[in-house]
Image (cartoon, rainbow, N blue to C red; front, side):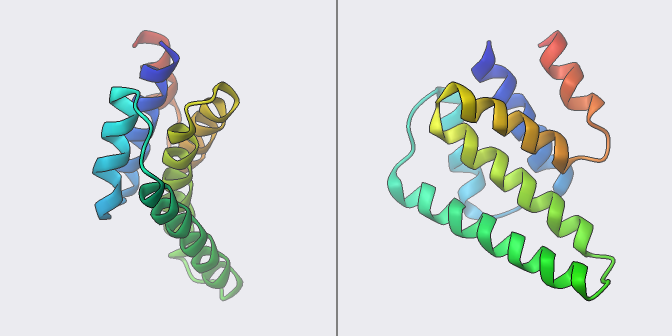
Length: 115
């Protein structure tokens, strides 16, 4: 049940933020199939989160209106990264990050409540 909730939350966050990079499909598949990813996928996602966070801070400091979109993408990518760990505390973090990624968290919370 928790794994399914995390998979749904991540998929919604990725979709709503238009996060489109090669790693996303692999990550979502690993989460849905409850299998551990290879180290290369973890490393690529970690780098993606770091790069998006750095870009967010740069844009935010410059007052660029695109900052919030980058923040949302970073949170969606971070949700995936936490979900891939497969450990319960990180799964909770994954849902938290997914909620932070979207404008309307009700879509995620409703998918968790009603499966």
